[in-house]
Image (tube, rainbow, N blue to C red; front, side, top):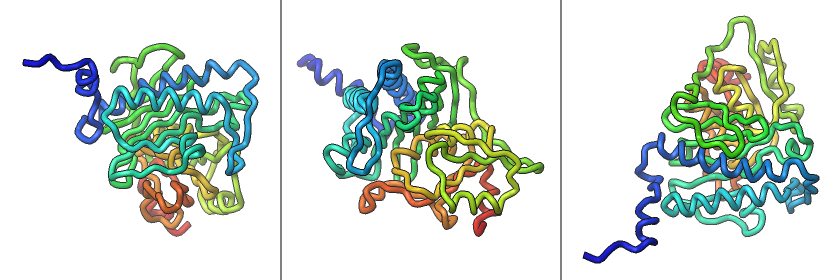
Length: 289
């Protein structure tokens, strides 16, 4: 019998994202996010001069180097699948996708990174049939990691440390809507009149400004109740955080109360408005808010 080649062995060892348990995919994405986060932090202490992309959003060397790490590790550790990554799209345009595809934001919250406030994340998500079913969100400056397949977890994750084992993880469950009133989350860098008008109709007793996909993670941890966003976002901004929230029992709906879908190729993967809720009953109760 002919011995398998090294190349064949490597291919056989790759995770098949179409058949592997979500738990295994979530751990893979978490490990890759940790590696990318270490690359981001290698740039954090130095003056990282941003430049503007065609859409006038900022990009730094940290964005590009972290994305290279993610794409390289996905290529060696997973069977080939379409990957839509923010900086690759900016350089090369959109690639074809199938029913399953990966969304990558190597540095969500570039403005927060430039401002050195720590509220930026690495985001990796698997989308299947229009919904994010696996995700990893790593905040390297905060040394916090959230990841989810069937269940959602959070853990302390220092730079260059391995993914914590089961004993080092906290399983996440969103909280029921508090009777005393809701805690709302809003973008630190982006807010608008529609968001203000929406929040004015709710029984909000506390409001916090938070950067990047950390808002989804706060909902998943039961630290807040609602995060509305009516300004523009891209699918890679939201997919990983939504996967964590969904696995913790929360929900994200479109601004009109309908489903919030992914794979909007014709729209260039641009999202419409949405509301993320910790308690799904709030979505039904406030559908016309």
